[in-house]
Image (cartoon, rainbow, N blue to C red; front, side, top):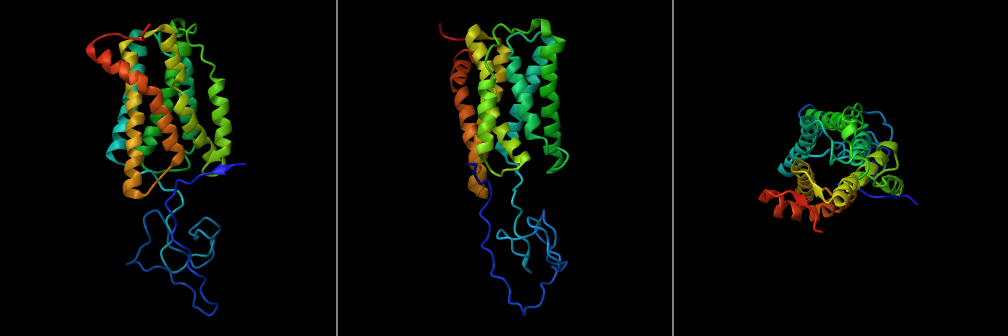
Length: 285
């Protein structure tokens, strides 16, 4: 059984159908333009989903209802979260390029992140939201594949495969199955988006597992992991902000974000007590 959740604002109740003798609805006047993101209701019937009411009734003379999918809005928490995420990616790329080495970096985690961004942003050429949104999508995809290329090709000789042994199939298969069972809408793009959310919440596990096997992490790697953790924490505040001011609630993204933040909690403690004091991050014996 497929469980579909909702990340939408509650739609307004449908108006009763007009009597048969009522005149046809008038097009909105230029002085009363429809809400942003919608088009004026035409006189002819539209296919389902295009300016139709939630109940599938033809559009009335009132302005069209809000679109079903609410585009993400910008706030300080989301902006700072995006900057933290971008900082983490840049730190990792600079670390590998300047040291000419990918030692201590889990290639498996980076492959999972590349899969996450690819699955999430397949709507890049079909769903335009803003220039900022499009640029960030391109940057994430390009940087993730560049990182994978540097680990498995450019600096392959320095890759520590002996310690990067986490079984990623234990992450990919369950999250893929869960995406089919619990999603917002049973469509290919929505299932892929949901899969990317679930997978991102656990994609860092191979890196954390690698740190646990080696018992330590380089300072720059610690900064990278800390920036990723801050990114997820800020996005939790972003969801709280949106719920409070917009009434927007996405259970899938919030639960996945909580799981990912919990995975970083122990690392946060080690980072604050050791790295910020100038010590190398090492796990307790």
